[in-house]
Length: 214
Image (cartoon, rainbow, N blue to C red; front, side, top):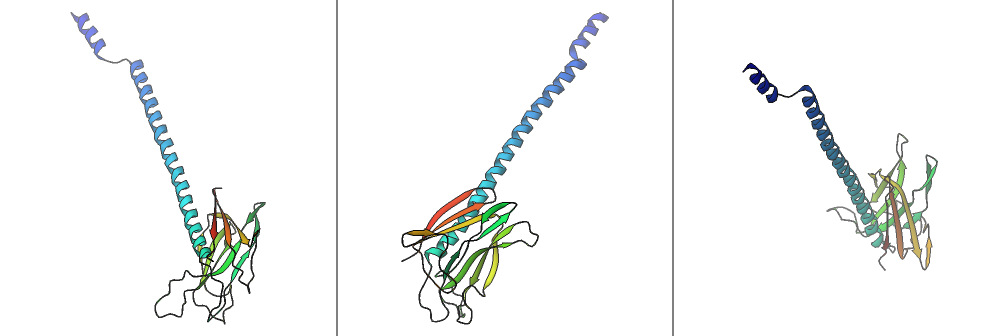
């Protein structure tokens, strides 16, 4: 009778080997689940980075295109108009980068009440090196009150757009020829079209063509 009770006790418990084996299986399952979640999380993060980069590029290109498509070269009662695109190159970590600049007068100004502003806005895009020397930021300049006392490319307010742009290359269609530069500080030869190439820090490249209004 005692032997039968001992057999029942032995059958109702787990041996040390069985417990260790169960723990090893559980650890393997947990590892697989964690790896799956980790991979999914990394994929989501990469997708968000790509999406944010695409949104940034679209916003910048849309703003540039709007200014170019509404560029104005003509007479003004106060001040003068300009369309000046300059090829700029810099070297960063042994690599040459295109940091083209553009200054133009454009019909995109929202006039503030009780101000001397007109519909014409002088704006510019250019790069500026960071104070710590770690890279460059894409800048925008706006001059809302044009005056003969303030020559083109002088005055206005400057602010940073982003530091995520690696390169900006602009090409201009004058007549039937594409060039890397156009105009000057004192001239306003409005091109027929402008090709915009934007390269982000991630290496993603975006390109479009903005056509100026006739």
